[in-house]
Image 1 (spheres, one colour):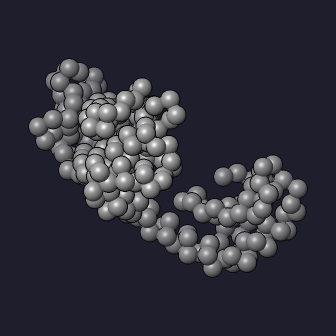
Image 2 (cartoon, rainbow, N blue to C red):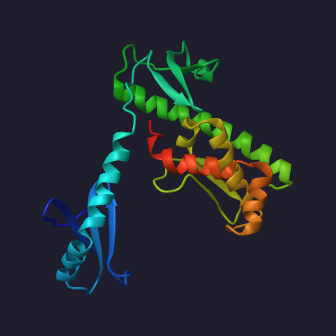
Length: 234
């Protein structure tokens, strides 16, 4: 967020303008509260809107703080444990780049530095996770698409802020690689969800029926991702 910081009682907030916005809106994130106002709206209306909704804003800020407290703090060092498919695996040092990978209950990480620091280990670990996640998600996408007789054009991974997965009209499957920290049934649900979009580019009854045909427990797994997705951090 940008702009001047204002305070009402115990709540700090900012105002932001948007030429496309037609009405006042409120957004609460870990950065704080933001009042979004139309381009030609007087600032006093934004301040008044915040005051009128101050109880809701406080509730949201408390929820954000609680969720933030649930995010694990990782110690980036060899010998520490990191999540992969819901399991805590020990980080070991690989003898060479060819040995790097996630297998046999260990995360094998290669580093040229004799004594890499925490930031170096974190950066290298994230690259390793992206590589391993891409391979795993491509394999799972091919499996579930094959069950439905569907085809995709590509699989990509990236770290997104709002979506765990996406299927484009061109058949490109995109995933947030952090989902691979979750238990494997959750990963399977996400892949099934995006693969089913190859046939139904909507969330119609037909779409959810197709999801259920491959993942009968999708409602429980979708709820797990919604409730715990914020804890999947590396």
